[in-house]
Length: 314
Image: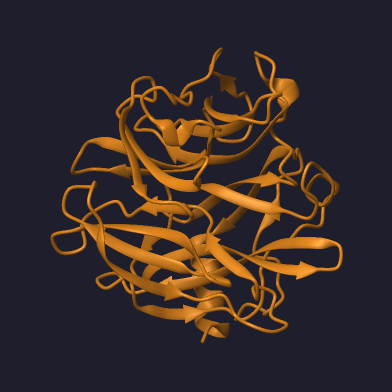
C-alpha cells in the first residue's frame, strides 16, 4: 500500500532539461510544453516560447529517449496568425497534444490570446510541420483544454476550464464535428476555504486512458499573501461516461520545491501540459514548466498513481 505522502513523482536529476539558452533563435523563455510519443518512439515536445515582446508561439523539440539530446526546430513550428485568426493577436500558448487514431492525426489544443482574453483553439497535424487550424472552439475566457483520443459514443469529448463568476472549475463538452460544442457539464470543482485547490483548478496534461478509467493530473491554485501557489492533484473519471468522477485525492501530490520551480518569471509554479506513457504502458514522463521560465521532467508510474487514488481518493 502506498503511503499517502510518498513521493509519487521523481524529478530528473538533470532538470531543467530545456531553457531559452538551448534555443536556436532568440527567445525570452520556454515553458509549458505539450508532449507526445511519435510512431517511431521519438518524444516530441511542443514548447511554449515567449519572445521579447511577451507574445508566445509554439516550437517543437524532439528526443530519442525523451530526456536529452533534444533537436529543436530552427524556427517557430506554429506561429500566431492574427491576420486570419484574430484571436491569436497576442500569441498562442500551453498546448496539449492527443493522437487521434480515427483521424490518423494529432490534435493540438492550445490557448489563443487576444483582446477578449484566453480562448481554446484547435489545430490538426500529421507531421508537426503543416497544421489545419479550426480556430476558436471555446470562447474566452477559457483555457487548459485537451481532446480525448476517441469518441465517447458518437461524439468527441473536450476537457476545458471556463472561468465563471468567482470560480474556475473543470468542464467537459461534446461535439460530432470538432467545431460545434454542446452538452456542457462541470466535472470537477475548485474547493472552497483553506484547501490547496481552493481558488481555481484546471486540467494539466491530456488525461491518460487506463483500464480503471481516465486518469487526470490537474493543477490547483491557492492564493497566499505572497501570490498564487500552483500544485498538482489526481482524479479518476469513468471510461464510458467521463463526466462522472470516480475518485479524487484530497492532498496535492507534486508542488514547487526546487529552485527552478520556486523562482522565475512567476514564482512557485509547476505547470505540466505534456505527458507520455512508455512502451511498457506504465512509465510516465511528465513535462512541465518551472516558474514560467524553463522546462523540467518528472517520472512516475500509471499503476502507482492509480494505486494511490484507490487508497486515498474519495
